[in-house]
Image 1 (tube, rainbow, N blue to C red):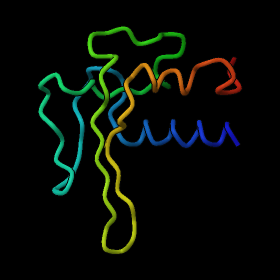
Image 2 (cartoon, rainbow, N blue to C red):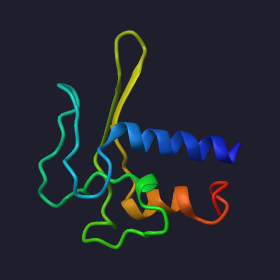
Image 3 (cartoon, one colour):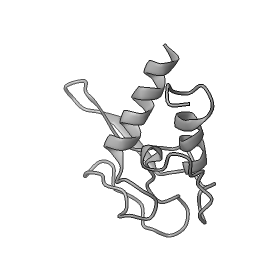
Image 4 (cartoon, helix red, strand yellow):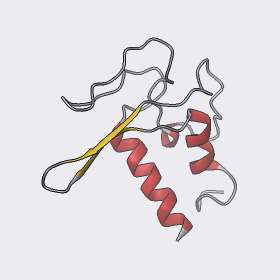
Length: 101
């Protein structure tokens, strides 16, 4: 069960934001307009691209931008991840979080 939750989180992280810290910025749509890169949020981050590299870059302790809403047809649309890059990395790579330990 825990592995399924970690995989779901990893898929959410990967599908919702560009890979890697500092590469690009957040994407969104008319209802979820991404913020400016003004230092309030961390850069988009993909922990799967950084095994063994705990994030220590400037802003790694800031939350990521996150926006979600439910469309008229019931589908939930989500952009970003509100966790800090450090939290995202720990969720994927901490001891026992996956079968790669």
